[in-house]
Length: 107
Image (cartoon, rainbow, N blue to C red; front, side, top):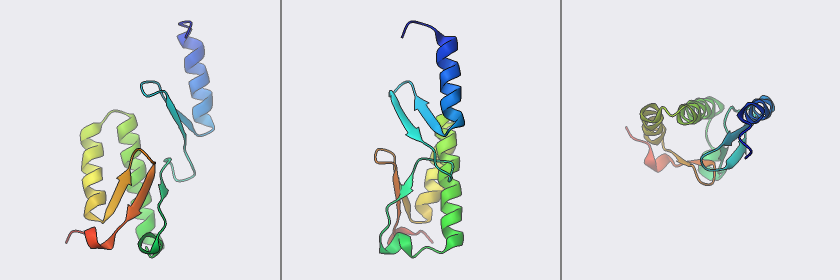
């Protein structure tokens, strides 16, 4: 707030090392888990029924989308979102949750 950008950048880098990502524009922060993104599954009977392999693919796509959004590569993030939707996955960016619905899987 005092214009000491060097210190602010150093603090941001330290936080990133322990898994905290800051968004200066929205003034929000999130903790990045071992999955590489802050999103957690909304476990219900459908999401819980996913195979471990399917869940791994979904988690990887969510991570790629999260990174693309943070790097302001929005067209790529949108393409990944489309891939997730084709697999029946909806991502909630407000609640930082994702859910699977087999009825939404595209052929």
